[in-house]
Image (cartoon, rainbow, N blue to C red):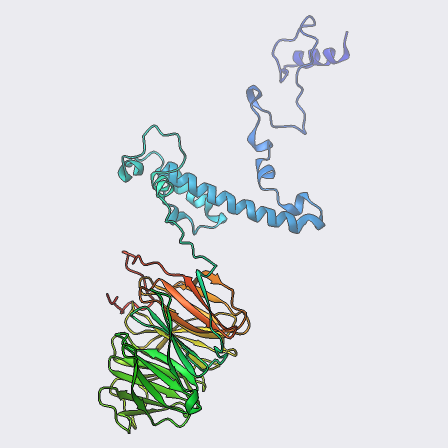
Length: 491
């Protein structure tokens, strides 16, 4: 007889029962029955594993330090962080689609908050609630198998706005011999009658964009003088010519005939700006004169003093009430229409670190002024002239020579010198760069815009004029969002 069987039999006669069975027979199955052991006191019923003995937490919460060598710990930790982020995003998506929880409420939760969120969702899982999909829209079929919600499907179905393409090749190039490479001069302007005026050496030439005819307006060589600036009147019937000797000549292009010569400056006149019949002139003598051309006088009507060096930029605001001036003293001034001799500027900006030649008033937002600095500055700055506060600033990486706003959209173009010699188109107020145009081999010192607001012409010391299509004629129907909330659009 089997010794083990004898021992069991003796225990049974002594009143002890086998832990596995109450009936023991020598003719039963030869497979041994389980025997109680002091080391194993937990068993699973019906072959269902015990969760306490399965150690699920080891499988799912095993840290990299426990399962990897020290050399692999850092990489494993980074991978674990990435997987946690993906897991949180996936959980948020599931809660939004299945449980109706908004992603906005879940996106700020960290991985440690998942248990709290799960407990909250478990409590609310069997509560009655109205389906969010049914409230959004009836466009999505209730039997749709798509895991994407109705709002997301609307976003995917919405047509994208076509991206406006700007040609990087000029549609016309004209030769401009003797176009000076001088940062402080303004030798190109485009009239409202679609005629371009260009100062070349001692002469001023007119080029008609309609007929492409070129005529010579004046020649100052007989007086031993040269052209340093040109500017069209608003109606396009007069053109002002600043000279190296400090004179300002007014020419009637219909005649053609010189109607007046304005004196007063003791040095070259590099900047001119019209305000109806008022002509402002800035000179190297650091003065700004304002004169009414209907009643020319020997003594200027008003003299503005404030700059310590040459005045190289002048622009009147669209409402005809303020004049912005920039100088080689790195300062930007704003003058009132009634400013006169003895009266200083109403606003002074000194943030630029180089000469301020590039000046442009926004035609869309009242009081918004843009200015650009020279080689040591390279920045385009925006100002709220209603409050005198600086707004935004962008470093362009090169000398800012000119600025001009689009007439139809909240965009502006800038031309640059050292060291990129490029033309940039910007979106405002995001200051996203829309286009970069290259082609000039010298500094792009001159800029003018066509009367329809669609094209620009640029001039450089490489003695060429290049015409570009940069702006669209279509005005955006949607009001542009500005940093200046108090500004209104001027139609």
